[in-house]
Image (cartoon, rainbow, N blue to C red):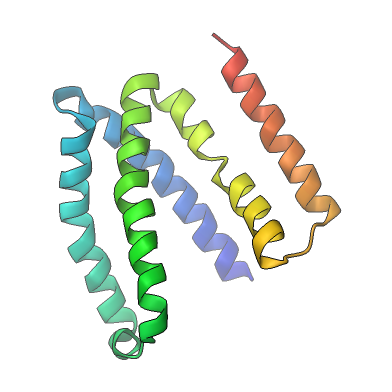
Length: 141
């Protein structure tokens, strides 16, 4: 559990630092160009990490899950990143990053509705906190 929390903190830091670099990089180009360059660098790096971690597992991926992984690749890595970069370019890091950060709210709601995950008091408190924080961010014009 401690490793998971540590990885989450590192990921949080990398997402925050990455948003700053996106904003700096998009000063001289469109969001679509920045997305393409980011994916061009990210895909080989991700593949290298996957191969180093457990190269045998890539060969053992069941064919039945490939369509889901392709869908995630299209929605998350391509469309999601393009929209993320467009939001940062248009609204700035300080507004776009927290709004993008409400992804757990949608993931939780979808998981409860479609996957039968348990709705708990903590999930409800977290949801109220996310919506309240988003309201504060959007109200500060």
